[in-house]
Length: 444
Image 1 (cartoon, rainbow, N blue to C red):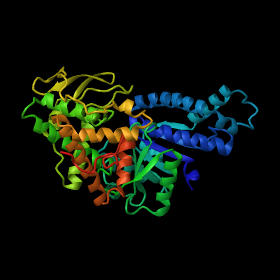
Image 2: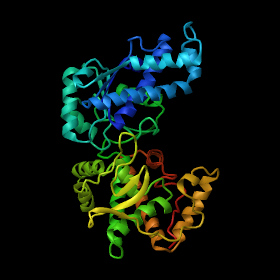
Image 3: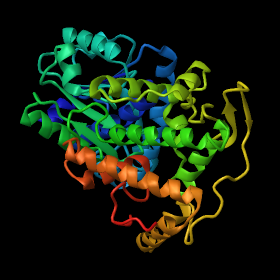
Image 4: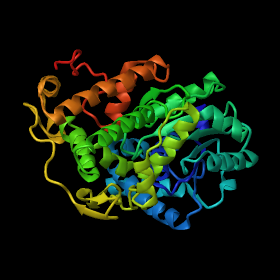
């Protein structure tokens, strides 16, 4: 069933960062499928229609896909030899690579109008995280697509059942939440709606496995597992900043919590740098969505002010970081935004002080052969260290664990292992929020 469905696929919002990555994943799978079945690629039997209203982004998308497919083909040369073993015209590795890549590009159709998805069996959506916009697009797609077409939404927070019903697509839509960037991140959250049949769920599962994803299923609740944990952790970080303001300036408090979550918790980024990476405006919308559907307070005056100031983070088309809480050179933090001064100012000197015994930076710790034992010892030392930063870090980890356990208790996640899998693979943490490395009792 899946092979037949893959003969005609469409991606709406293909020119964006998420859409381009999803397009690449699908193109790899389609090209390999056609090559294995037909002994060639680009015969016209398989079509991937890439739709975006931004014409400039489509031009860049073509170049991106050609470059990425070339790299992919070079790494799959043994498979290419098998695909083309009966084609006497292709002798050298380079000839096979060029034929495969050109054939893959020939599978593509670049379009500006969503009506051009009319012949697609599978339609993927990766547009702005707004219910009204998604509903309008899906409603238009429903008018032109076949009644057997299936829809995959990359929403990171909107309830699938609500979106499907509003679009007239009950039973035909599933949540397929890729993590950024989709072609690199292994994690995929699948969110079935209550009306999805078993065959649709099985197809979605099989496709995810073919795309090489680590699959975690989430209940259809706003925010799912990933943002369900992350947004609540952000709430905790914002509270910590507010509490520190009795002794520190806002700039100092933000730097303190960012450095604490990066260094003491041994993460790739501090929580406010991660905020910038995702996009403050993006997370602002997710906060509003989760507050609306879960009836939980996610509002922050600080975030309101950052959005109003135009310091919204995100990335440029070349992958470099836009300024948000911090100002960047490439991906390196150089300054921090001061709301009072309405300008970026120098970073304060180190605020968190002594690091626990056994501390290693994230990149170093991640490469250690005995990482598990080192982490266990380090985290015990963190909980025993009696400094302000260590006390806040320990408390932060315990609240993070409570959040994870509540996601399981509420049925959002099927198990605590699923929450740990999402945080480790989706956020690149070295340990999950309820990992065995964490002390099971508090030492002070």
